[in-house]
Length: 334
Ligand SMILES: [Ca+2]
Ligand SMILES: [Ca+2]
Ligand SMILES: [Ca+2]
Ligand SMILES: [Ca+2]
Image (cartoon, rainbow, N blue to C red; front, side, top):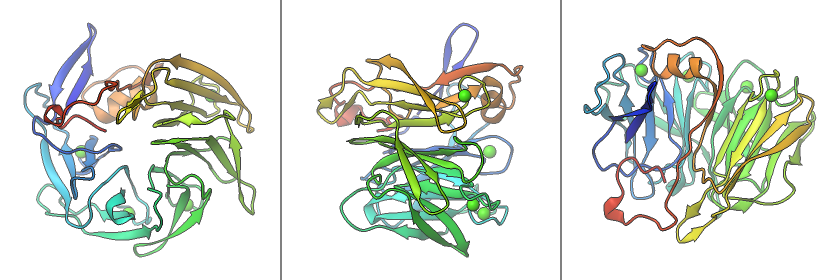
């Protein structure tokens, strides 16, 4: 796992982990140890029942010194495609919500008092699904604005009920195998939800709560082909949230050489202006951040830069022909 650190001249490469770790897609960042910087979390793919976190060594960065990796989970079922951290039970402490596809579960893991010395974190099942459709995608937002952060993913939003119990509210039964995002796209009321087919083909839709049910709106009116990158941000700075979506370039033996990416500029009232931003640029778990100040001060607090508006797309190009297993290293988030 490598960190490409932006400099005035280009990019410097820092080693985060030089070991062969079977990382799956959909990791996240969170301040696991509470020292003010963001640490990195990833789960094992279908060959592994483990989840790990890497301790951010800020401000002592050394390009050749890997970060300390610790194990969060090393039991139960395999496969962890997507996770997100937040205070989902309202107790003021951080939890990690992680899909565990091998067990068809959404796990809720408690960040321990001292994650540097604790062994495996305690965890419970927050939701179990049945059927053959794999559930993916996680986002967080206070959907119903009760002051408590909710979990969004796999076609649902999950509302904390008490203890480790969550109620699953179905948004769209056709959007389980998807990427998820949420935000106040239409100003006021519940926050809105976006789902798009991530590891398959399907529609890109945003959903609004009308007080009785979730109403979906198709943004493209054609199927997105592996739209594995999905994010919400105010890209043009007009105060209204916008949506970014990008397609993958290859998966297995198949390819999508004309993979597309779009930004949908919102008007805050439910209208969106569609902009095609690239064709032939593959995206796999690309993200979208608007303020360099926000990025540098949270992930890299030793840096300080004046606030300025800048879109950052993190794109990962994958070869059309998948790499041989022997070449697969810890940095491959596939
Ligand atoms: Ca930290
Ligand atoms: Ca909590
Ligand atoms: Ca809530
Ligand atoms: Ca905007």
